[in-house]
Length: 235
Image (cartoon, rainbow, N blue to C red; front, top):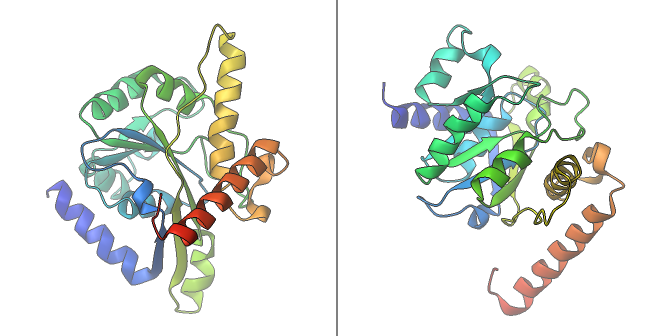
């Protein structure tokens, strides 16, 4: 089965089980332009929603290696050409594979938290996404998913989930400028997570709820929205 066909099937299934809204798709680079999409993660469904929401086929997520040999799911993920990554470690083999996709102009998606949040709140990010972005020099696009945590409740009532995927504006990490590696990775990871937190409702921001940088990004987002209303020209 071809990869494109799998995408089509997943697209139909997702629209069958969910009312699916996308905000900020214009922030996703055009086809052929590489980027690292960093995603909030509360459900196994978050990744396929984000993959489809971007409107590109040249996109692949980084997925925990433990799912590789899972019956059916592993088969589907292999057809989608995902990058398998070992959780809780610097998996340089996975980084090299992700780099190969980025060099081809693809989008690579990953969840900086490293695992699903069990309380529907953002947890402290791991430095892997910052390290990969630094090595590749590609822009990052933050993405937040809401509504996938309602899957069981919606299905029990025979209703569709109401899911929203929002993409923030692309950004790049701060320059290192001689900063100690460990300090820079912490700063860069916080920057990534604050961009994601700024796309989430207050009750979902978790670990980053009180970070001043989140408030700065929210203010910038509000200014941008007001400018769009005045000029009628989305930026």
